[in-house]
Length: 272
Image (tube, rainbow, N blue to C red):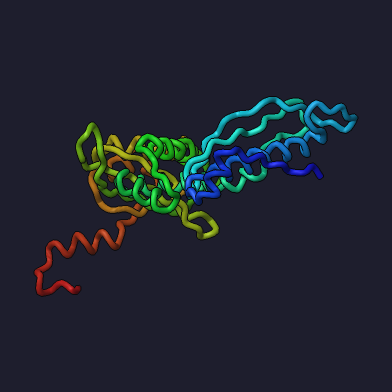
């Protein structure tokens, strides 16, 4: 096994002797750089400039990478390899990559939930020792776009005998203003009795045009086997359903029927 040699500069040694807290990140940086070089040598089965019949690839320089730690940000030189039978990435950084992906996913979820960038920055700074910029939070959110597009455009491989249709209004930010957006949702129950979200779409209202386009999109993606549609009695939904799935029986949702009936009842007769 190749020995690991960590060379400490005079600055680091002096800082350690003086118990300078900033030197902890410098020491970690030197240790990681030395460890990654050893990992590359073990991967290609040869040291620098060594001729060996067992050599599997060649060293191909370094790529700079900034890592945020509780001791502060550090700059590491990630070794690169070319001509190897297997891809190379330092194992000492893989755990950090998984943690970084988990952190980015959490940031995106907080952003979707409406947490302000200032609060996100304060929380990350308390947990990781350094904050994040608003652009980084936005980039984390953009990383979810591909997954969301794939989910919305996926093809249906099962049949859904029961189809639930509903809409709800959410506050969204558009052009610097807070507006009401209508979210159209379709849920299906397959032959195994499992409930799945089939589609989600945003529009300005529950007009017939929006429902018709939404349902036609579901049919294009392979929606079939529908034997019953359950929804409220909204005029736009009813018109859109009749123009796309008029052959399927319809049942009014009991919950919405109860809500509508309560609006005609006296307050003292309502059961809370």
